[in-house]
Image (cartoon, rainbow, N blue to C red; front, side, top):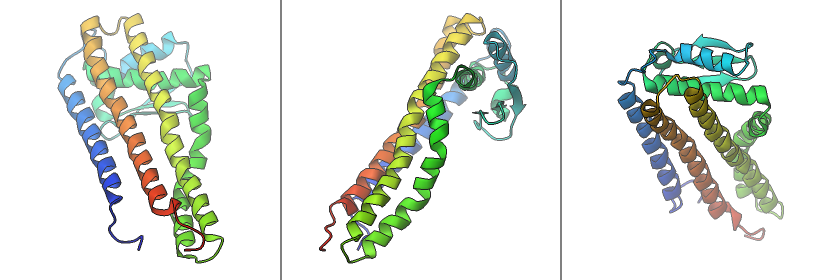
Length: 233
């Protein structure tokens, strides 16, 4: 009965729509402000280098990676990876994205607790994501006193992935805050440019909010489907 259509699918659909809208929003916003050249003329890579040096970070390597908006900071090997449309572009959008990734590098160097917590939680979240549905389905198809206990274990495993999404939010918001602060302090962007860059970073932050909302909706669906199942069903 759990494998066919049920009204709770609407929660999954809502979550998917929220994520698609957020993804479209960040792409649209980035494309809009990628047409505005920064007055300093600095590229994303050059801005990242200045920010890292100003923060006293000398052991992070800036790399160019393929793809569109695949930018990320890798704390395991201390590399700041900038995508095709960010690395060599001097737009206010590209500079803002590069600065955001520098924000993560600064978090890492300063021992920012939410970042350390997120990094430590990655294997837990991956473990929970991989096992949650198999465990829940095993419990659902059992017809004994242990079925509800197994289902609850599966729900707890599923909640690990949701918790990871929630932990990610303060990490991303703080990275953007640090980015805006460093861009202003280093004179890389003027105030009007910072306004445009802020819109890009806010649009990017909404993708993480959307992912967290979608994960919460999926957890709610799982609880509605299986949480009220009685051991004596």
